[in-house]
Length: 461
Image (tube, rainbow, N blue to C red; front, top):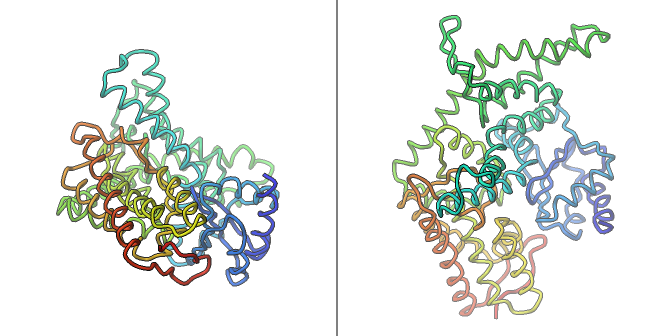
């Protein structure tokens, strides 16, 4: 931790100092800063720091790609800042609409990506236990495994409540109370599924795992809270702001926001399904082929809500099945680079990048190897497109959300209309094709690294 303790102040200094940081969060591989003045960033100095792989600039957000050690670096920076990295509501209003949306999605979903990835592995174990008939589905062991694998996704609005409250400037405990109320009808069999109120048919048992309703519920809560704090005397605010916030938001959410947001979610899922079904093969090839471009620009977490919505509405998702091939394509290219490395350092970089990609983290492979030698990235994309086409052709689906794509979650591709072996075939093609192309290409010509900060070396023989 001593290394990270030394690194943190240097990062803070070179992004313009603590006073220039409005908000800081992280995903699986990146530090994501909202800065007051991006012009104060010293990019050359940042590139010289250990652990810094790449800098990615988006209007409204400055990203530093660290890799698997990002959580330790984030913790060290947070300690250096005295823990003052919570969201400033003003930060939400910066940048274009698209960039604000992406920044908001990142802030809401990335803090618990690791937990969702871990739960995905547990869910894969549950599926394998069922598929192979290794345990009685009514046994204690299976019940515990199933609870661990399913509880997070049913209670997902509670996770959203915490991060959305931080993003929108609402009280996180009031947000938790509001989203808990949305989930509560699922826990009581005595509550009817549908009510008729003011001529409307309202279903109160639709918010388990709900994404859009939970986000908009907390957003509305943030406005109600701010208004109530202005009109309620400070002496009474402790009790009556949360009390009135819950009453007002509760009825509005159950009557208007929840049903409308649910219809929006259904519409999004149906719209995606319509586009996908026009040609699953072309859709699979296209999305898998360009999948890692989203990672390059740091906007890949914007896919998360769509995949979650598909799971909630349809009970399955096809996007992550395609993106598994996108990951394996770049993995294959980086793996092939091991065999054409000219020196020990380049071989070590390729090995390290390949290990990270095997576990679903592709940034080290992208920035350390594949983008350095552009054809390797192209080979990875070609392999990904072929794998994605196979997933579309064979109708591969995942029956649980997969935020980090690796072989440990393959069990989740088995279900009523999909088989794990189909996804295995797809990722085998996605991996093998770029690995072979990389080796052939590297053996027959000199590879010249692309120009750019941090991009140097020679993998050619």
